[in-house]
Image (cartoon, rainbow, N blue to C red; front, side, top):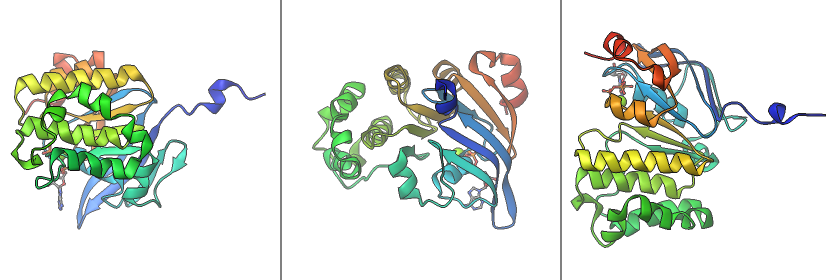
Length: 242
Ligand SMILES: Nc1ncnc2c1ncn2[C@@H]1O[C@H](COP(=O)(O)OP(=O)(O)OP(=O)(O)O)[C@@H](O)[C@H]1O
Ligand SMILES: [Mg+2]
């Protein structure tokens, strides 16, 4: 008989030995990273160490030279970005991915056109997480503040009904009150279950509070990984302060 533990995958996402380059320069030097189901993983590191490149490789936006990427029990290496998205990877790139010339409502509709019924069922949830979205449905995306645009970008990703939400520096350049709302949203999403999050973050208090485990990258390699409550000021001083 097969027991539960043998049938339940231990990782939603597994990255193993991942290497990637831009032209001549090697950017990722053999990354191992595991995202368990229903967990938040913080991906940390100084500027330029390869955090965004790792996310782009996971999404199939940057080709890998070696290694494997397994998502939801399936190898995704041969899949295009849109196929990975349909499997349940929701990606919010660094610097807000919205359509500035479409209204907020139209921005949401683009996501709903991908996810259909499952996404529509999450619309009320997005309005609850970020009430400002509901208040501004008729406005053009481009007139929202940076923080509001970030909320819209996260809302759009939720409407694709992802199993894995990938957030690249969601608090970058955003006012503190909106950072708090994004942090609350991450906690709420996690509490509902059935979703894991990769959170790239420079704001360490936020990353520590929001995540279960962490990975620290340096020059394309994982230099430290562990439980997020082990992120002491000593660890931070050694690996993360400039
Ligand atoms: N399109 C590109 N072509 C060539 N090199 C690139 C390109 N994009 C990024 N790089 C280089 O790859 C390295 C890793 O960049 P990446 O954007 O992944 O870092 P990061 O950790 O996300 O940095 P940040 O914290 O500033 O967002 C850097 O040295 C960067 O200069
Ligand atoms: Mg980056």
